[in-house]
Length: 264
Image (cartoon, rainbow, N blue to C red):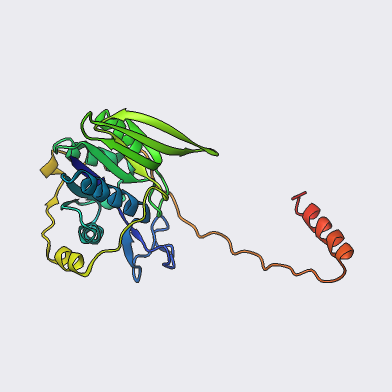
């Protein structure tokens, strides 16, 4: 089984984010550590588990992004994926979800693929749009926010259990299909020392837009459908209040405070 895992490099979730004062549509990258998107770790792990359960198959990690994005692919290689491909070109860093999905669909369509796995969303922009657009462009069935997955490699079908409001929904699909992976689907493994060493030495092929048969216009980079106008940090939280005294008096003060804030 040929499994494609789409991954993204994002700022470390513990990083202190600052908005660029010159161009407030971007963040300052200096001093920030970039990591493999946490939700993509579930996608990588699921691909590896499926390969291990079947006893055969190939897991390929693919990313679309600037030069620094290569580190996310090396993280995936360290975990155990077989190969990794980096699609990068001038201006690709500002690609919106539709452009990223267009680029991925063009490249993936040239590869053997039985299953495409993605994280449910990227923790930097939280768009959660690329997988659904990718499925549409490839003409494949899709299941988003999946927390359980069964693969029938004989009949080339899968059964996905996905999160919906307050419940779960089970859908059956023929393969190939696009699946987005949520927390609870599995427990991502840690990379081994050997895996890290091999990942450092691995050659990761780079593909330009021209290499996969696209240009700036056809990739959607010239006229993005989504454009970030500005970024801003959330307002600072007010300091909390501590109420002291007799219970009856404290309750009265609390009720009045909640009413004044229109919370009651």
